[in-house]
Length: 199
Image (tube, rainbow, N blue to C red; front, side, top):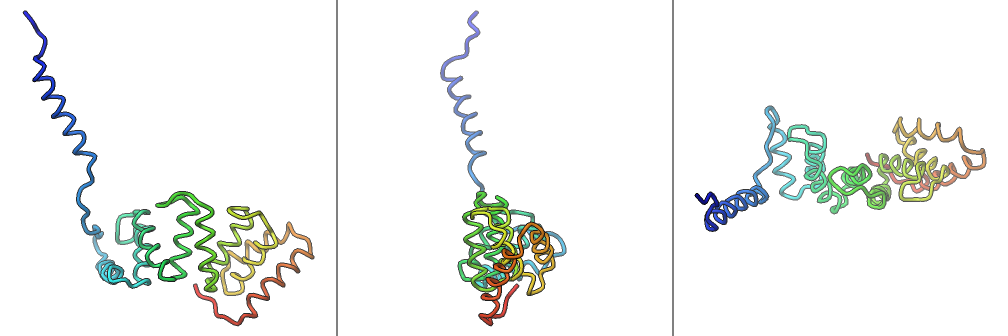
């Protein structure tokens, strides 16, 4: 008695199995974001973000990155931060840079983090100043420089960022008096520009 399966039967089973496996690899059509219970305000933010409002786009990115009112999704957060950042929203630029610095929703890239932090700092964003201080303190994407780090932390602290003041004071213990003076002079040039800082 021959127990071998006919060639056609094996081929059909193989085809059906392959079809089943491949169908699982195809992405389902995109659906609207799934709002969590009790977050009707998120739907209003979503409408404004989809209409191109950079403030709403940044806020929606925050909702996604923190999982507030929407399932946490760093890829979605990055996309919304990028839309707002491209429109010059300084807060979104800092948020996008942060995702790059952490490798969340975006490839880990000190270069891209630095790029977005600098864009926000050009708009005098106080959190961007602190982020640049961290980049220079740790030598991430730039040569390590306590003078530069101290300057950026000082700028951020001057506008109320308490953690930046703590970081500035901590690195000052590793600096000479002349380095601190140089840092303070650089920070003074920024503050003399007379531009208000934004959070």
